[in-house]
Length: 393
Picture (cartoon, one colour):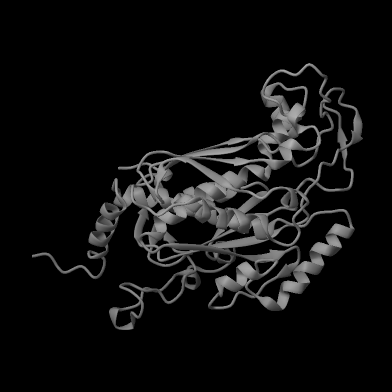
């Protein structure tokens, strides 16, 4: 069995971000341009802050790729933080000791890692905590996700996302989603009729010196049967997806399929009826509905995976919030250091990356292979077994 493993490193205003990806088979098409396409999508979306105007994220591949194809060895890449050269960050985030005194951040921001992190690691300065806990780290995740997407794409799995809500404004999701139109939308919304209302909600929130949350939905299509397993709690794919989405900054809730609505229904109303062979149109084994979101008992069931991340309004609000000082415990006002107003469109792109990463691990676990051709053969051999079982003599 081949493991998909990955790590990110780096701080928001440090020299840059780095990532290492291990377990990718040899022979997959890969380039900096492929990764750049997803990084651009992450930086877009209406409601982003000024940081996106400073950075033009580009992942430089350092190893694991030769002449446009993966080599089977670990892939390493770096993403430079252009902001490191601005406003004294070279001193504030220097890796070597500095002679001059650096001002400490002691005004704790509610909703951030500030208080919990300083207590855990023993700091008298919030800076080391806020730098790593920043959503800037998701840039590296999206770069890793682009590599994972290339792996699962080799067996026909695609991953997309769209904005479901921004504040109180909710989209009506069409039966067929035009993903190119979603990417062209400033809100990354599939329902054009609510796009302007979402933009207006962001504008009103900005004028009020506040932030707004929402829900993004990620869909994976072309997913085969049998990824994940029911035999142990930590092998269930729905649990891995939940952890992946919940690990995204500001995500406070997670849903698979119609999980939330289904909690208020009876059992007969939520099951996805298995259709007989005479009704199959697209593939062997089809369902009348997909309320389970493509997962049953921790395994994929051949339908599209549908998951949602619920983003709270980000905690870095422009208006000063009541708080306490880290050093004295005295009442004060929180500090503000540049932020977005709404991150739901970008959150969906990060969600895609995390879903692709989880699926890449599951694909390697199920089908293995040191070369992508070997993995494809294993996949096709398994696919040939899918269908009604002939009685055994």
